[in-house]
Image (cartoon, rainbow, N blue to C red):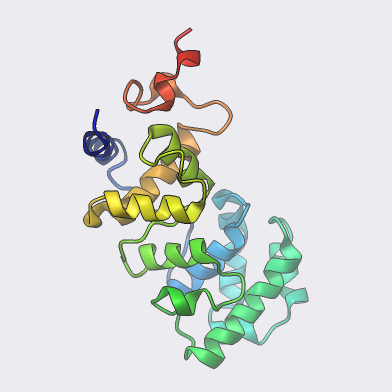
Length: 216
């Protein structure tokens, strides 16, 4: 199977299996999403969704969040991973939004990565989800699943290399959805320790399912 055929069959499968792919983080506007994505680093979306409602309620704007302290924010987010550093990042991020960006979340990578707590992956999530740009945020799910399927070669050993390869080979109009396809597939089917190959529609197509150890 050629690379193009593999991409086409993978896209066709996901279009049928996950037609309404979207982030599982709850948010109402770009400000709330950037807060949620910062909190989601090395933490489940389920946990983030549990703690954000009171955070959104009490700090509904960048101005409100910028006016508080990390110690106060910590009490809202203490159940997530790395709450101390995330509390600090959230307050500093809000201050920069207010002081440097007129309280608006930037719509470009260069400005987004200036914000405390925002790396390339988080920035790309914002660009993809909020601004519908054809960028590929690469988290652990996207990295694992894209390699297992064979969409990217083994030589793509970093998230950045994986991002660039996927963006180059996916049709521009599906890149944003493909990000969610790969995440949801990795979260519920192609899991890290025990991938559910027996129920996967890509079984027999993807590189991982064709490995000898699965055919014993």
